[in-house]
Length: 358
Image (tube, rainbow, N blue to C red):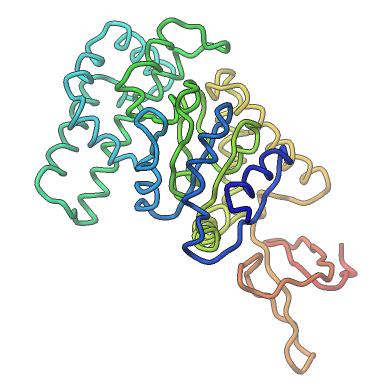
């Protein structure tokens, strides 16, 4: 009888894009068949995604060193580099190519934190705060996370300023193939080296994004890469966690206020600067968002000057109408009836029937 290995292979052979559910109770081999599938498809690149780090470690044990990378949280990455490659990292920081690139990044970004002294200070703080206690209090973890991000931000900026469109720059290629840089950003060897077959990542890391030496990638743009075959393990748990992550985002909790602030910052302060941002494709995406909001204004809606939406409710007796602030909340009834927008002095009134006042 055909097992999950054949099931996976038939799916890979039959489809270029799409989603395929893999059903079955625990213990039948849904996850244990994955390594063999990967080894049987030597030209493919795979991502294994789970909601628990233990599952990533179990999957990693099924591969040889050099065949996989694990994307860990920022603090864990910096801790590991400082424990195992501290000397090599110091050599990197002292290299004239790195120093020159870091200075150039500082001039472009205007970030004072982009200097070797700040990087070393952040590393020292991470080492001191995490040296003796295995289970850290939340306030120490938050501070250590902040310092770890200082280190990673500096390395990421150096990579961005040295990268040319064809990735032929000698300095860039020296950096992306440097063992320390690869340890900081494991998605780099996954993207560049054919021998690295699979990337193991938690849902949280995939949602918030990871840097691959070229750009920050996340779940929203992984489908652009036709090479990728993604295994979402324990999808029922992943779905629940993903909904929770999405609903905690400011774009969802207060979408209109978020979009209004974003529009003002981009249209008024950022886009007028010709070299913002560093990557032109990001600029094009921002320009498209601004263009959409400009189109709303051209239709006569004064957004984002007005960004509060209220919903009109009728009392149970049907003789009193009341406006309440609220729209687009999850776990509420979704109406398929049309809604009409009536622009008032202070808000956009959402109504279930067309108002006589336009």
